[in-house]
Each structure stands twice: as C-alpha cells, then as structure tokens.
Length: 355
Image (cartoon, rainbow, N blue to C red; front, top):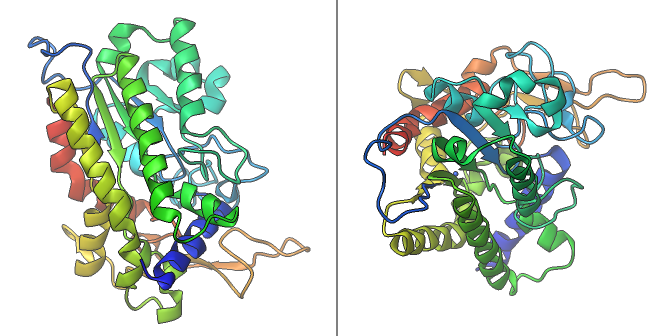
C-alpha cells in the first residue's frame, strides 16, 4: 500500500479518537434450525461497538456527543449520540418494532426497558484497546456475559434476539498513534480480524442466533479527508485502504458460515451503502445536494463541532437544514444520513430478521 494511503489511516482514525466514532452474523447452537422459530422477528436487539452505534454510553467528560448542538433534531438536546438525532441502532430497532435498546450505562434508571435488549457500544473504542479509556469489544461482551450469569437475560431471550456489532476502525488510529509501522499494518489487520472472529464466535457461543457485523465505510469520503478538496469529491486512493480489512472480514464470515453449516454470519456492507449514496447524492426520494460537506463544523482551525472557547462562546456553526446533509460532523452521518444508509440496507436487514 502507498504511503499516502497509510497516512489516511492515521489522520482519519486519529480524528475518530478525538471526536469519538456492520455483514451480519446469525448464530445457532444447533446445526439445524428450529423450524418453529425460523422466520420470527427478533424480540430484542443487543448492540456492541463504537460511536456509529453508541446511544449514550461514553461519559460526558470525554464525549462531544453530550455537548450542544448534538441531538438538535432528536431528542432536541444532547443524548450521547454522535449525530444530530438518531443513529443506525435506532433505525434498526424501529424495523424490529422495538424501542431503541438502553445504553448499558443507564441500566439502573431504565429497568423497564430491559426487554428490548441493551446497547454496550462505546464511542471511540475498538476490537482492541484504544486511546479512549472505555470497554473494548471483548470487554463489552464480558459485561453482557455477566448479565446472563446474573439471569438478567435467559437463553430464550438470546435465541430470539438480533445482535449488532459495529467496527468502524478506531483500532487503526491507536495502532499508528502508538508507533505502529506502515509495513506492519497488514499484519496488524490480520491480528485484529482474528480477535474479531473470536468475539463473534463467542457471542454465538453465548446463545445468539442472529449477529450483525459492519465492514469499514469509504474512508476517503469522510469530511476529515475531503476538506482539502473543498468537500467536492472523495479521495479514492484513500478509500482503497479499507479494502484489505473488508476482504478479510468477508472471507472470515464465509468460513464461519461453513463451520456452522448455516448462513449464520452476514456482513452489513457499509462501504457500498455509503459509496452509492454519496455518488448518487440521494437514497430513494431523499437528496443530498452536497453530500460530502458536514453540517456542523468548527469556525476556524483547531475547533470541531461542539467546541466552545474559554468564554463559553460556540466555536462551531451548524447548517440551516440538517436533513439536507449526509454528514453531521467530520466523521459521523446526520440522522438523515443514517436513515439513508438504513434504507439502502433495508432489504438485507429484512432478509436477516426473517431467517
């Protein structure tokens, strides 16, 4: 891979850690599926991962998602989501006919919502530890397993649920920020994939029958990397950096399906979804006139969405209509953007929840 591509990994993923930031896997504990259960809509949603799925777990002290103007579209104030409103998790829950699963952090205050599942995702985290001091994917599963041992959830609950695993790339920023070399990056990707596969198998081993895992989106199209082009076009060479990770993930899922003798694992293709929407500047009837331009940006260098100066004055500006923007900040989609991604993946999602 070229040096410029590796630099993209560093600049993009480092910004993920600063600002915070799915294939689907179905798992069965039996080689044959229970015909009586096959095709039934999941009754709960369990979520693991990072800021593309986090709905409020990351502490206010470190997350810009708890600052104005995040949440201005929904619920009207900051809610811990890294956008102006709803994220992919929320749209998926709605498809299932469920209320969005509560963030694990708030379990004591929403015991009446446990029936809908739970969200263990923390913005800025990865498969391995990152610069964000929050539970990585393995630790998130540890937390979930403890709830099972404490009988908060039963085997029946797990068998009838959908599991979503969001992996957006924070591990790469940590690797490079800690002195990882460019030539060593492919080997690191291999190690990361081995751990991700182990985590997916572990979720299945706990009793899950339907698990979803995301691939990486087109990094060259993130505003962080299109700013130098005045948000006019993507840097395709930078997006190529995602291909190796996504290729390994696809091969891993195929192998897992062969091992389980069923189509238990499926990849949610975020790369294609993002790319198609950004290229066509629309998804269905929803149009994005300048899809690469973020809605919320810092007013000058050194500031990002949500920042204020020492006097508390906002050092960011927000576009007039967030529904016309695909990206909210330099990393994350708007609610409208996530709705577009969800719409483009809906047929895949419906297939998953009906099998």
